[in-house]
Length: 543
Image 1: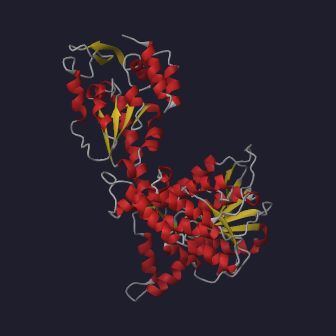
Image 2: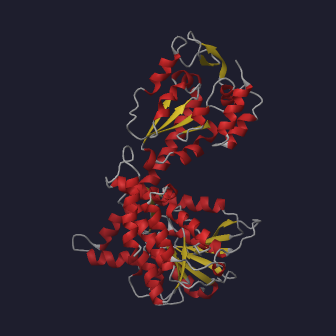
Image 3: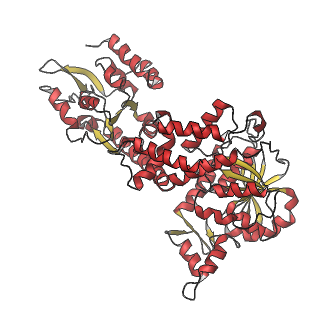
């Protein structure tokens, strides 16, 4: 029954969509870890896959009917993404071939098992179908995260052939854990997109317009100095005198919240970083900009009024780009046109302190010191003195609801974790602290980092043996033409108007927002509605 030509046919079909897995399967020499043995011939002469414990995966009397029942409870009128444990002979998935709205990820125990099956069964019609994908337990996490897109695929479901799951109990348990963890990650990301996607699209388009109005110039930062990253944590209060005394030794990079605090002590930052796209973030910048020498480092997703005000005031502006899908897509357009497009900095943590740190690293600074980077509420305060919340809460305070009461409400709006008598933290702040550790662990450039804590400078990280030769990312602007906003506007609107699938990924965050607002339903709606909504938004915001 073994058929080498069948293996080659399956291999050639798989390598068109997943050449890495195809080559791994082709190079399998020892199949002792396969969960299959040679298939058995059913009463109707069909081949039925057989596990090594002797159990058939389908009835040996009527395997077709048995396999057909596997998807009997699926509503084929809805968009669904189904993860299925066991390739078997794929007959249990045949019904799904007729439905373009059903996407299936098939999970096998290992490459040895797939290699065994490739010898006996013809999977070409599945492997050639773009709605089917195949992976093993080892690459399940990466494959699933890259495959399942809630905005397009709707509901998620996990199914398993019972005999396979019973025989591979440990593998099936691992599959369920991986899928659960992946879904939690995807859900968190989807939730953020659902809340902020409309704001992000507005901000990106308006900031791109401002980008086109800026005269290109290369920024040469004084990397021989130390870079001081200024967060707005309560410990910043204890750092002010130190910063004043040692001001000339630093290139100060302030976060948006800390920038305003420093100004109240007559400390003008050399650069200020802002990444927050919400309207409330503009409150950091409502006062007059006192120093035209300050460079504004602005994520394209950040509130656009900041860049517009900085441009009007005559400040230098350095836009940076996140990994937002729309930014990624516009970057590709700019590359084709040889237009300048902002470099990317790391905003994945969601905290501007780490974004400011990454900016310093990518400028070429090697000696970096952190101030006010608490990632905790210390001494019963959420921020250092002088943030915009001080004036906001003072104006909102009453006899029954004082400024202190409002600050307490801010700190305790979510469950807190007490670290000691004077410090509490939250799950979000802990995540920020962990993100800093992860950022430093991944850093490949030569840097040495200290942190100002309890009026002492404490060493926290050194990557002095890094071998990567780093070229600052802000020294190549003049190699490109200025971004042409008028050309970009026509290009973008035409793509959206024609429902060009090339831009689908760029509008997926907006699809999440549309679904939250009940304008679109991923399980049954058409993504074309999101194209139309994105076109409507872009038409208004690109005028």
